Image (tube, rainbow, N blue to C red; front, side, top):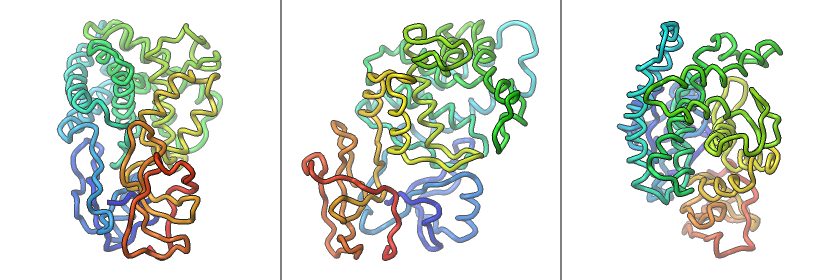
Amino acid sequence: MRLLSITQCAPGMRLAKKIYSEEGLVLLAEHVELTAKLIDRLSDHGVHFIYIEDPRTADLVVPDMISDETRHKALGTIRKQFQSLMNGANQKNGPYPYISKPFRDVMNLVLDDLLSQQHALIMLMNMGVVDDYLFQHSLNVCVYSTMLGIASGYTRDELMTLGLGAMLHDVGKTQISMGVLKKPGSLSRDEYEEMKRHAERGYLLLKDEPNIPLLAAHCAFQHHERLNGSGYPRGIAGDQIHEYAKWIGLVDSYDAMTTTRVYRDPMLPHEAMEGLYAGSGTLYEQRMLQVFRDHVAIYPIGVTVKLGTGEAGVVAKLNPLVPHRPTIRILYDRDGQPIHAPYEVDLSRELSCMIVRVGAAFDND
């Protein structure tokens, strides 16, 4: 399979990996033939990258971090509970028990899936339609943050708290007006101030929940705080921000950059990583950035890359010990011509060989 931008796709190509609906159901299965109309519909629904079949890369497999069943149950729970809050269910007095148990049940499924593949790298999860960014984003941040917690050696109880805090970090947005939440252009000053209130509102929604750890509520409160005190809502800094909230804030930024938004196209992982590192030591802890970099597939399997030698191909294998030095299957020579016998270059061994371009389209493809 190969990972292509939707703009590079053409009628007649076939899907190599499922496309999911907003509810986490399989919308389009493997081997479905793309038509011009289908490509346009996917683009209209925010699908910017898809995997397509290619006989030269037919053996490449991209593992899912969570199962279809877990994805479906998680997105279904997030959608149902968040929409309940959006529809005014929060107006009743006292705690909101409909928040508690469903999310703990889903978090246990996520933990079971992720703990069964502890050495997996974080891969793009945005292979689906994104009609409502909030639901998919909440799941993505949960999965990515939990994987980083596993990498940091957290216990299952600690992972449960971190994961719940991550899944519910944006629950306060259910209390923001839809006009502000889904505005396609820049927010006015007043609208931006309204948007910023979601952090405190999330904390207020969660703090009295009987089965939600208070620390998870603080994750919602603190996930926009930054190391140098430049964040919101309180402008706290350094060790005043809980470690879990720091992880969630880092992952929240990464997923926002690699996901389609109403106001811009998504970045590829290596571009988003560069954006995060621009805030090293000021917005994000350098130690955490290093852990994140070591556990994210900066160059996803199947993505097209060009090497400094002039040759080009696709990422064929990931190297868990050195994620930024994958193995490349060479498909084109330095003149851009297809080669008849593709071969592989392991960048973790060929240290003088560098990736110089990512996601490129080739005229002879």
